[in-house]
Amino acid sequence: MPEIKYEIVEHLGVLSETDKGWKKELNLVSWNDREPKYDLRDWSENHDRMNKGVTLTKDEVQELKDILNKNV
Image (cartoon, rainbow, N blue to C red; front, side, top):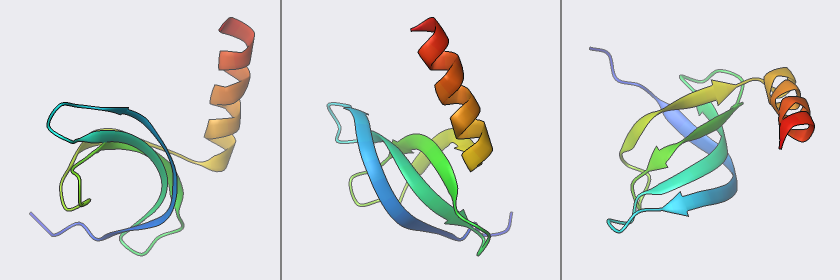
């Protein structure tokens, strides 16, 4: 399996943290040198390990925000 290259371009916030120090974070992340996207996933304390997450474009984040504003 090829290595995945990533760069956290901007840290936007932490939603929660586990007892083991993993944090569910919202970040702008560039995957494999591509345009940064909004990324929501659990990260280890030093960002060297991660769990599966969701990556969204700016338009998708805006649509999600609109949906949440209508329903929450």
